[in-house]
Length: 246
Figure 1 (cartoon, rainbow, N blue to C red):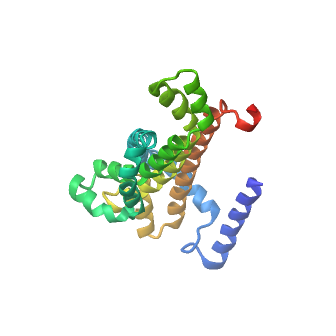
Figure 2: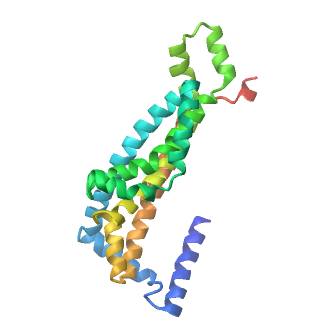
Figure 3: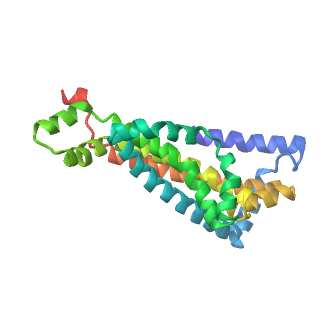
C-alpha cells in the first residue's frame, strides 16, 4: 500500500511538472539527479552532520530534563499543582516568540540552535512523563505496598516502569518536534545544515535541489520516529493488561 502511495506521488509530481513547469514542481528524475550529486560531492553529508549535531544535543537535553522534571511533577502531587500552570503557559506560548530572546542571550550559532530545539521538544516530553507517573496503575501500587514496598521502591520500580509507554510516547513526539525545531533554527539563525541548504536552494529557485533536501528531512524524521516506536513496543512488552491478569 505504501508503495502505491509513493508511486502516485511520483506520478503526480511528473504530471504537475509537465503542466506547470520546473519552477512549480521539479520532475522526479531531476530531484533524483540532484540527490545523487549532493551525496556524491559531500554537500548533503556535511549538512546532515551539522543538523544531527544540533538535533542530537537539543533532543538529548530535552529528553533528560523533560523526563526528570516530569517524574518530579507526576510523583509529587503538590509540586505538580504548583508548577502545572507555569508549564502549561510556557507550552501554549508559540516557540517563535522566544527566538529573539534566545538570539540575544545565546547568539546566532550552535548554542542558540540547541536551546531552540530544547525548548521546542521539552514540554511534550515533560507533560507525557508527568501524566504517566500521576496515572500509574493503582492496583500495582497497592499490591506493592501490601508486600511492604517503601516509597522509593514503589516510585522507581513500580510507578516509573508503569509510565514507560507514556514517557516513550512523549519522547517520540518530542523527537518529531526536534526535527522541525532544528530546521527552524537553521532558517532563522546562522544558516547551516539541511535548513541552510533549503533556504539557499529556495532563494535561487532551484526547486529540484530544494526537494532533494526535503526528502532527506522526511527520511530523517521517519527513521527517528520508527526507532522510538520500536523502543516503545519493546519496553512495553512486560506490561500485562489488568483484564488479562484477572
